[in-house]
Image (cartoon, rainbow, N blue to C red; front, side, top):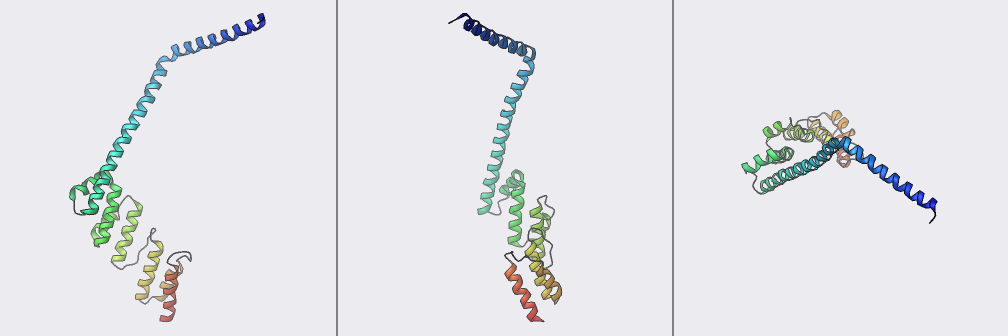
Length: 188
């Protein structure tokens, strides 16, 4: 080893020590802020885990209540738990039961739901049960088809054809729509 190598090695060691002293100085100057950030990060993760476990417990209770309602539809306690723990699932369950039981009053209540799908499906179901025309976004083509059928029954063939022509050719109802349209031609 020559003297140049030794000087070079000492110089690099000095730079490392100098950097360590700079870091220590910065730490002493900003120690309070560093600890606040570290504690904040720890509290964030602890809080997130607590909220996540509370949410999982809430969903578990709602699922348990829903499963109970599948076997005992009139269980008031399970209905209350489902309504409290998972309002969206409660609305879907209520919609299913109201449709199954043809309960127009319950469906009318659901038309003001914050869930747009439940509200729209409830309006469509009420119209179908009352055999009235409907305007549904969820059941758009089904709504057009039933409106056309009601128009045919009322003798309004022109309106029925207009409704049936709005059903897309790639819809699963297109074959039925063309059959119904064909039957209106023969009905003339």
